[in-house]
Image (cartoon, rainbow, N blue to C red; front, side, top):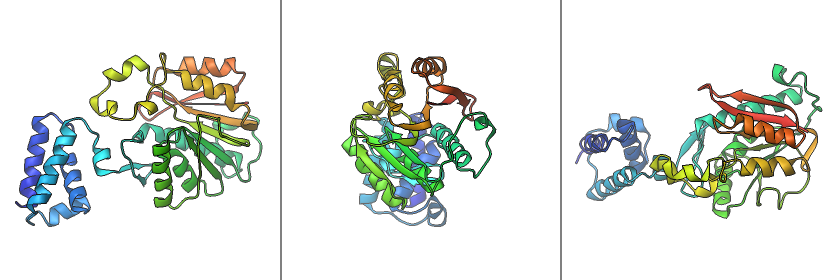
Amino acid sequence: MKIKEILNEGIYVLKEKNIEESRLKAKLLMAYLLNKPKEYLITHDIDEISFEEQKQYYEYLNRLISGEPIQYIIKSQEFMGFNFYVDKNVLIPQPDTECLVQIVEKYVKHASGKENIKIFENINIPLLKEPKILDLCTGSGAIAISLAKILKFSKVFGSDISKPALKVAIKNAVNNKVKIEFIESNLFENINGKFDVIVSNPPYIETNIISKLDIEVQNEPKLALDGGIDGLDFYRKISKFAKDYLTLNGMLFFEIGYNQKENVMKILKKEKYKNIKCLKDLSGNDRVIFANI
C-alpha cells in the first residue's frame, strides 16, 4: 500500500472511534513509524510501505484507540520549545506547566539583576549570582531541563521518588545537552544543602477523581497524579519542610489545580510564608502560586 492510502485509512478509523485530532494523530504515527518528519508524508505520499510497516501502523492505531496517549507511542512531547522523551513512567509535560517555568525564569532574572519584573519589586530578594534551583517531583525532567537551558548561569537539581522516572529525566538531560544533578528522593529525604528556588508540579489530583478522568490521563502513572483524598497532601509536606532547604528569602513555586488556590494559600500562610501570590495561566485559570520565607 501507498503511504497516502494507509494514512487515509488511519484517519478514517480514528474518526470512527471519535479520537480527537484524528488527522494530526494519524500523521504523527506514520511519521514516527517511518522515522521521518511530517512533511515527508506530503512529498512521498505515493511511496509504498512494507507489509510489516502496515502491521506496525495498525498496532499503533489500536494502542491509541485503547486510550494510550500518543506521546507514549511516539515517545515524544514538546515543552517550552524543547523536545522530551516520554514513556509510561512519567507524566506527560503539559502546556499549562510552561507558565510555571516562565514565572520562575522571570523571578531568577529579576533576582539576578538581568530584568526588572514588577510582581517581585516589593519583595525582599537577595541578589543571586549563581542561583541554585531544586525541582521536586521532576518526573521527565521537563521543568528542570527547561530552566537549565534558559537560565544557563544557574545550577539546577531535580529529584523524584521514582527510579524509572529519573532514568527518563537523565535521558532528557543528555538529549538536551544540559548538566543537572538528579537525586532519588522521597521529597526532601535525600536532599542536602539550601536552594534559592524550589519549584514543584506535585501530584495534585484527588484520589477518588482519578478514575473519572479521561482514559488517556488514567494511563499516566498514578504516582504522579494522586495528591491524596483532597489533592493537597504534597502541598502540605513540601510547604512544611521546604523552609529548611531554602536560603534566606528563598522562593517556593507551585503549580496548582484550577480550584486549589485558596487551600494552597492557606497552607502557605499556616507555615508562615510571606508574599504569597497566585498567577493565572493563558486560559485564565489559577495556575502558579509562589511565596518566600
